[in-house]
Length: 497
Image 1 (cartoon, one colour):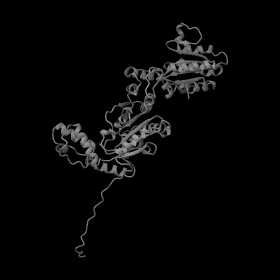
Image 2: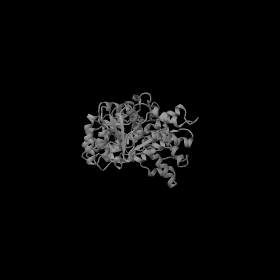
Image 3: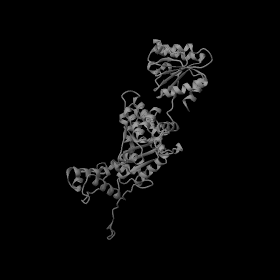
Image 4: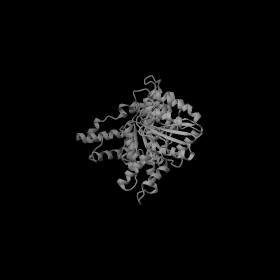
């Protein structure tokens, strides 16, 4: 619903205190002004710079015009008949720390019912004092839609060839979703200056600056696609196909993401970063530890801000590494962290259920027993995928990849790697190049995690068997256990008993 439509309902219902959350004050004021002109309502505006202004009235040079308390009292003279009178107070949240202003505004909002005097606070944040909470209704000035962004692009790209093709334009609009009108104009103009055509790269550059200002998310720019990963064929095909069918025409079909469960070093994090390069989406890394705040409620607020930023960056990939370590306290009584983990989990679950943005969530986990069970139920993720130790064919490709990367002799003998992960193969190749030794000798310095933590690895495999998708081949993962050998009793000579 447009801002003007929502505002018309509230004014006709005689809501005398309205708080509009907006980062685009000029656009919001223009929309309010057009609505007042159509409905023949009186309109006055106030800000600390230009003071009180009434369209059609002579401007005043009174030094008290910039006084916020005087602006509130001035509304008594505007509400003279049955015509609605509206005053817009821009960035007025800065002055609500004064007891006199809060008391005067509360009195005028209550008295405004009789005189049809409407007070509108236009602010980028919602900071309402306790005394005014029951007197204000909060509405949001929505960001521009795809159609509005397309109109902005067409208004800037006026020369032939400056507007991209239809398919390319859809990619540009995908990248521009979540920007304000001014930010979109700046991004499109920057792209025209650089490339003489509107491209999504300039839009992503502007969006990346949003992350630096927040400090809650990191933008990872990967130069490696799926060709840099050996194996994981089924996982690659599953994620890539679901992202291509992203459900732009039907939001109910949008992909949700995957939970990657596996042995440490099997490529879970590398896959999440390579998926962004493969699909042309930015990868946002959410470090849960960076969200922790020292004040009560600050952590939960940081989580909500980070998820809102991810929604604004859509379409994108949101990567949470080792999620069980951040949320493991949610399964306890909350005595260790005063319930912070439980509240973080609740915020994350609500977002996973309710968000409609094109954000693809990838979370990794090394210990499923520490994972809160409600996070892994159906419809949280598109699937839970288990990454086991690579098989012989995958290991050969990983060896070839890292031998070429570290410029080693491809014909030399390789160490025994029956229980090695891809990370351990890389470590062996790096040590061989660092120490200038053969691979077989460098392999003596590598102790695989399947040996140092064999019990944990076996327990993880047994849990995943029959419960998770297989990352290598389509279908459910099945752990192949070796049958226990039975002692053979020779029957050649019968027992004396």
